[in-house]
Amino acid sequence: MNSDRGQRARRLGAALFLLLLPVLPLQARGKSEAWASTQYAAAQRLRETLNNLPSAQQSRKEYQRVIAAYRRVYYGSPASSKADPSVVAVAELLTEMGRRFNDDRVLHAAIGQYKFLRREYPGSHDRFEALFTIGQIYQDDLRDPAEAKLTFEEFLHRYPHHHLAEEAGKALNDRGSKRG
Image (cartoon, rainbow, N blue to C red):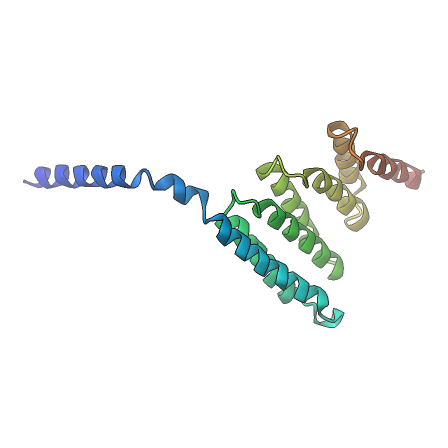
């Protein structure tokens, strides 16, 4: 008798799974484009408010609030047209925050965010600037010439004809002249 109940339960579970199967891909894609646009607009307003605050009131908490608003966009709707601009906004805000509070941990988080953009959104128009900015953060903020060199060399290797290639080359040359 227990075996009959077990078989019925498995059949019911399988039937339920088959009924839900067509819905699963929709859930995997996340929320709608309209939802993402609304969330992105709200995040933009928060960022504008942060930028308009007097410098003394631009706290870590305020930065984190704006960052959370942008993250909501790409976590909730990763395939939307607002996802990769939200990733970029988080990276920019982390960079600003790290510089403002002289916090290497936050600067490393910014680098991680730029790397996330390049990995998860390889077709993003911002992927070039993301790699270049990683090099700048290593060079100017973290004072890590070895990582800066590797990053600028990677940039030149991957994007030799990009308009930032000349700047990447100059960054490598400046780095070399500072050593000698």
